[in-house]
Image (cartoon, rainbow, N blue to C red):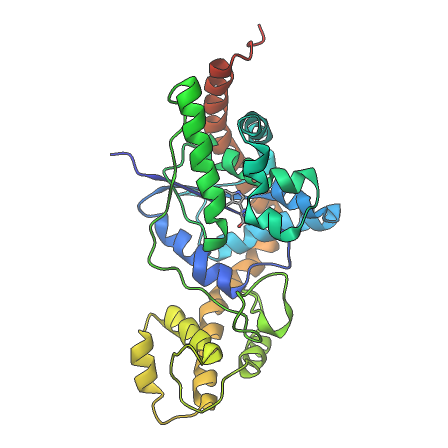
Length: 326
Ligand code: TRP
């Protein structure tokens, strides 16, 4: 039986992976590796939309890989690679871009919300569609903010297929348990994000002392009950974090802290995070100390990815009428 193909990507820009990336995404990707044929890649071409400093981008590409491996991605079971190592991505993006309406691309909220930017930024969702369709992915685990891009990908796959004949698998969103939505510790109405940073963002590689400090200074709500409620977004977020980190239900945790104050509760949240990230930090340190190993992982991943991409692209070129070089 062939295993379903699952694909996802992560941008290497920003200081690194945060708690929301881990609990909401990468930790689940690690689990998916058992039952799926997984492709995970570092979307360094997408990162060019923010024109990062070249040395920083290079360093962060290896750093992002080390983080992904430290968080549990396994290159022996999954195909882990850098997007730019497979030159077919931008080629397929061009082909799909020619099937994308200008208005259709303009409606992408991520683009609209930024209020303009480069042509590359406008084209971003089309490149993402190419990433996904290239590998004939069955399912794509993505967060809420990427749903619209996945919808566009499905539309483009169907459009291509009906115009040129069945070529692409139409990908579905990976059905996962409602992924944990981790909020900023300082502004619990907002998603934890790389761009906000500051004390509200917990980085996967934060030193234990920093972790403890951030959790201690997390915004809590009026009252002193540890209870999840709409009018207690700060406490609710910490409960979500503790629940996802420990696997205990929120209702069970509420009972545990019944009659106790925020202090005990926060101390336990901090402990849970320190414990959860200790092995990740340790593994990360080993990996970044060995750049040649990381380069080998990328080379092997690229070879596996390329094998699929080359096949897809030769079909695509043939279908759309690009004369093969003789
Ligand atoms: N746009 C995604 C993000 O910022 C990253 C990404 C690029 C991606 N290509 C992809 C995710 C393909 C899933 C599939 O999170």
